[in-house]
Amino acid sequence: MHYHPKSDLLNNRIILITGAGDGIGREAALTYARFGAQVILLGRTESKLASVQQEIAARNLRPAFIYTLDLLTASQQDCQRVADQIGQWVPHLDGVLHNAGLLTEITPMADIQLQDWMNVMQVNVNVTFMLTQALLPLMLKAASSSLVFTTSSVGREGRSGWGAYAVSKFATEGMMQVLAEEHKHTGLRVNCINPGGTRTSMRASAFPDENKDKLKTPADIMPLYLYLMGDDSRRKTGISFDAQPGRKAGPAE
Ligand code: NDP
Image (cartoon, rainbow, N blue to C red; front, side):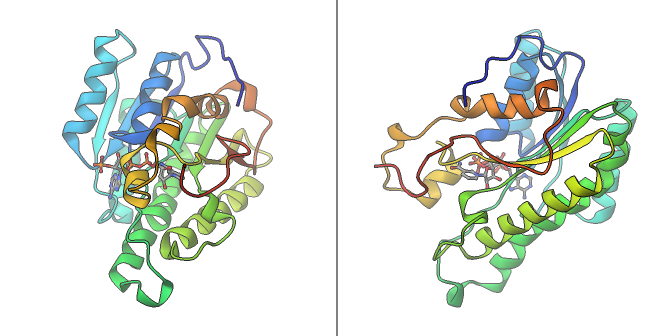
């Protein structure tokens, strides 16, 4: 995507990023902070979140908040506690990027372990729903807000072996569409991003033998992440965007 936002695109915006300690979420948090946002970093590993927080502080950007939560075991009450804590830190939320995700073994449906299926659904669908429900009141307090889910090419067209992960991303697309329709007369817009193959540890676990140098880095795909959080996307809702339009799914050669 060719998008060149102004350096103050996200001034005074408050944005929550899940899975902010690593990979795409880490890059999104640093990028949003660089464009003026105050970021709230949610993730599982406190030391990783603290390192992102320190990097933001070292660049003299708006101080970041961190919230440590394992989404694999998080309950509805835990999600409400997240919202309550955020409500004490800030008056509203201008953006939420649901980025945390879980991918388990690539294996045929017939061989998927039930616990793996449940774990993927918990992290990618159930807790995403519970967090969204808890955070909606804070998002609706903002004059205009942006809710962004993370999908995948296998969430649009099923692929052999991608089992629970693919099904969870179809569900993510559905959740986005329903919410977008429900909020089309409010200031809340709801969209999906499909990052496309991106150089992270999740990607490496799925395609250990591909040529990593041919993959885009998280930094390369940030234009779309910025676009959807800033005013230029105010009228866009209910859309599943590609961060790498035209990229063919599958391993990089
Ligand atoms: P990474 O594995 O690099 O990062 C995922 C992040 O989510 C990590 O910070 C991780 O925390 C966090 N996370 C995972 N499980 C939990 C949990 N139980 N509780 C809290 N946080 C958790 O993945 P990517 O950056 O590659 O992926 C980001 C998103 O993009 C995902 O939704 C993925 O499905 C999607 N995606 C990625 C593609 C790619 O090629 N990379 C392609 C298509 C979609 P920790 O660091 O503690 O492990």
